[in-house]
Image 1 (cartoon, one colour):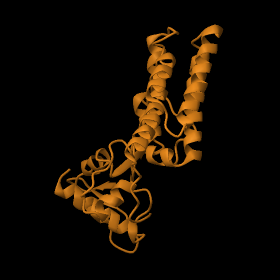
Image 2 (cartoon, helix red, strand yellow):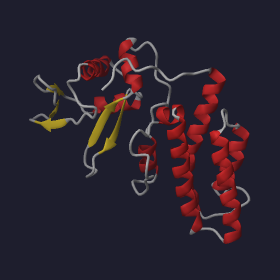
Image 3 (tube, helix red, strand yellow):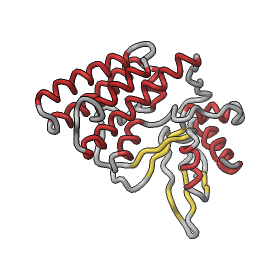
Length: 237
């Protein structure tokens, strides 16, 4: 990430702390050569040239985005890691993947064909990890979608095994510190790599739900081992 991108984030955080930009940031293209404007309450619009700078900030974990309802444009949000980075002048790098948005991950992995109801809002990995209610909701939603896909793929005896493994995976993810070896065993079953043989198409679909579940488990294991705490937001939107 270069100095121009850091300065862009500093500016956006400044406006956000002062309540001059909305929680969601929608860049508006205009002019030739194309520039982009962000509406600022009580001031002239903020103008910048490279939309790719926002995507670079997303790649670094300092911002995130989702597609608008038409799927034609991105709506950006500053993450907690972004506020923290500006507060400490970029001395502490954000944890990799900690502010990953689960719904966007599923959308990307499935080529835009799948989504999980209930994860559209407050679906960042960091929020799900730190909020027991959100974590329960996310794990429940992901495993329910997985089972729904399995019903049309498996015979009843195989589905019985599958449902049991799914239930045990949920239980494991609700523990204070999930066991890595147990997670691996259960995921192998649910991906059709052990005990149950499934089609390649189903395995690909299953991984769309299993990968975020593994991220939740792996991040919780890492937190317990390192004593990691989520960075505090320096300002709010």
